[in-house]
Image 1 (cartoon, one colour):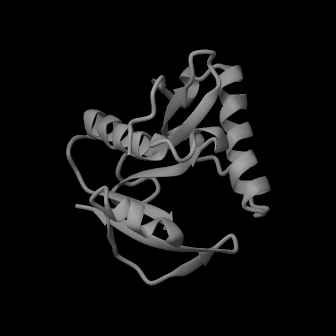
Image 2: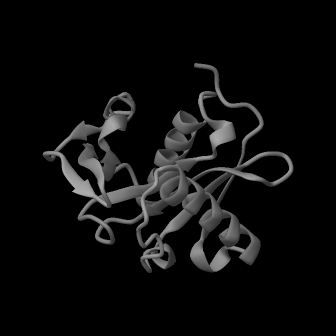
Image 3: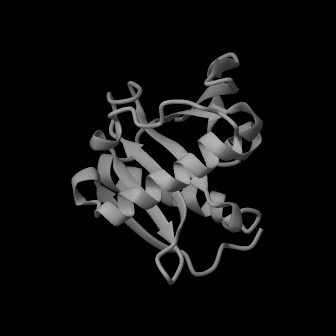
Length: 153
């Protein structure tokens, strides 16, 4: 798949986010995780303050892709990447793969080349496997959606 063209990447701590960036992040997460996936859940979990926020925007500054990245010991014993989300208009163009590859790069640049654990929606298992993650748990239901834990050693 071709690489998504024109994505501008930026990583910030929570305190470094502008209110406009924070609003865009929360809007995209709500648009996809709550409305699109029809999953009412408490997205605001007080973990945002502890993570790094990777944002992929277009030339006009519209948020198209996002993850939050954690050092070991915050979400899991290992480092982790979560709230992986791409805007509907960025899908099918390689943006998700580019987002995860960039997330792994940012995590390693900040915390070293260490194991990464994620809680993945089960239907994305093959995608994450292609990025070096291996399933480490049975399927579990989180917010009404089947999930699995995966580890990238």
